[in-house]
Length: 93
View 1 (cartoon, one colour):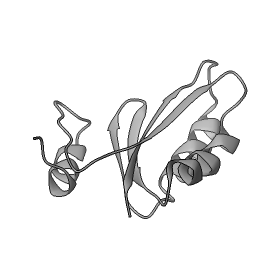
View 2: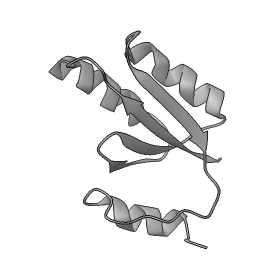
View 3: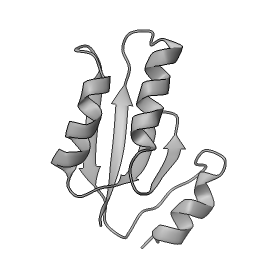
């Protein structure tokens, strides 16, 4: 199953409950990593399926981008704990 980069822009000050719902939804995918402050990588069946699963937790002012990734992914200074996850799934070519 492919991986997708999820990037979002919460334009209003979200509540703690709003973040909790978002993080729960992102962690519900079969495999996932929180790689940067507003960037996650999740495993899913299609970009449309990932988008559809996430869209209900965002309000009308927020931004959301879902993009399919290839096996080649280069990175620098991801969030603590994400580097090993990334190295185990992707290579920089």
